[in-house]
Image (tube, one colour):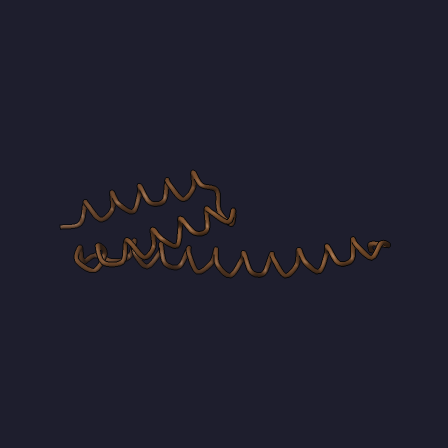
Length: 84
């Protein structure tokens, strides 16, 4: 266990931030999963900008890496284009 006041505070802050990041990362993963499961092109096209915006926001605040966000957006766009 930490001895300094500042390190105890840092532990509290990190725990709070970790829970925050886990929530938003999980929400993003569920949104991506839902989009991938969609078989209707119109619905998928409608959902894509929302998911894309979420990915960009999470990459901006370093919850996920910016390249991961770019890769996911690219794969999702390919998925939507394949739908008929």
